[in-house]
Length: 160
Image (cartoon, rainbow, N blue to C red):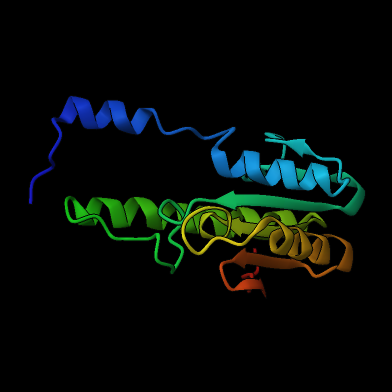
């Protein structure tokens, strides 16, 4: 199946996809602020350029898009065109994520991934449920976890 857009149009569309101040980052920032947490955003000095750094709790929060980071949920669909290209590209993102998370944990940070499906879409968590999960993890401990539409789960991390 061929792409419905010309190469130039597809390229323009892909360049327009933001890497910071996305809708899911803005929603999460609002919830963290309402809950009284202070944080820094997009720290380039740390592995993976974390979306949120909560120094007081020595924790990092990433907001991951389900497509770009290959989350096994209803928002992830393998593209019908250039499938091998996309699977390779997304696979590299997943490998980089694992490396960055292992590096951060090795440096003494705790890491939380909040998946896009938990923040937007028909199965998203409401603000109260999401805030409860965030507070539970930030204040309660745990080295690595993820939040998706099913709640909060421990995250298995490979050694660096």
